Image (cartoon, rainbow, N blue to C red; front, side, top):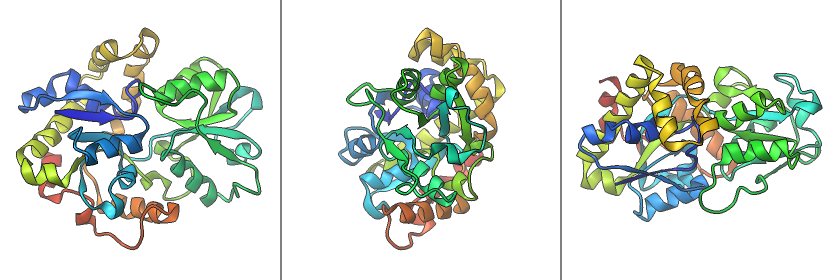
Length: 307
């Protein structure tokens, strides 16, 4: 079996990667390999086309391949909350929370990921056209094998962009390198009301797999839940995964990043979250009308979140 993630050298989808590398999928009877498929819409297309069995990506992005949530279900959360950071070039002297710093600037963001930033800025009163905010792909972030966060950090350092909207690993590289400053960290309270629930890092499966092999879907959830618990018990295990998957410089950062994320390690997908995500999806034009919680989440497995 395969689980696709849109970024490997990252903390964003680390529970999925750690479940593979620390053997938690195997302990649940699943032979799962990790596959990098960038950008995230292509990961969900692979799920639709049955070339992968699970996707560990941004929840809202399932709509790229499964309109109106038909044919896909979210199994559990890898972590709660929208998990990207707005980072601007340090020489611009940005301040934490100063959203106006984006005006007249070019911000790098990945496809489908950029929707969260667009909506957040609009909700904060920024008119993207009037204020001349350019949100575009990061130079060099194309093709197979792209790890977006570290690519965005390199582009910021080279001044190819004025800022980026990306994961914690890219953020940490930029901040520690002295060329990037965090303006927004949504998971820790920044941004307009409601943006926390625009999306989350989730685990998704096709309805076909769930109907054909519900035991495999349940086993995948148990593996993620146990991986989260293991990292909470001993966060140093993150370094073991990092050494297997990351370059040495990024591997040296991952334990600190996962320690910071541990308060968000809850596998539950709440009704409040789904309502907020669907509101966001409607505003972004990728969802029409109302969709029930049960049409988004594989609720038959929800008891596993507490095991």
